[in-house]
Length: 90
Image (cartoon, rainbow, N blue to C red; front, side, top):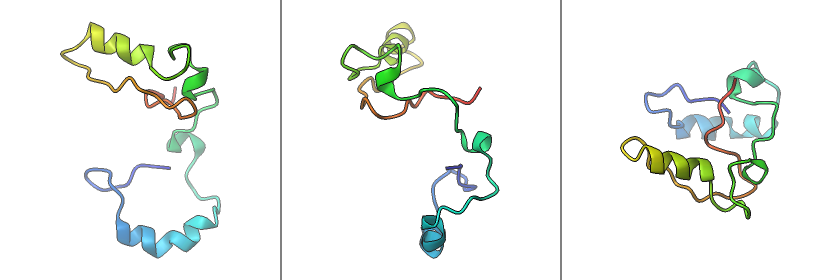
């Protein structure tokens, strides 16, 4: 996945429809793993040290909300097998 080159980053439905068949073939393209944001580390919420004991709440997001309420209003609820929205390539 890479960002769409539209001003707001939203997909262009006509392009998706026109290329859906090709996209479903999963043919390797010219996008590198690094450019697409892939990382070589565990990024699922249930593996994170900041997840609550049942991996249903993100303690990192809670700490940011509590410490910097004027800056952050993050959704602390997580789905355990999802990938963290805070992941960034290094």
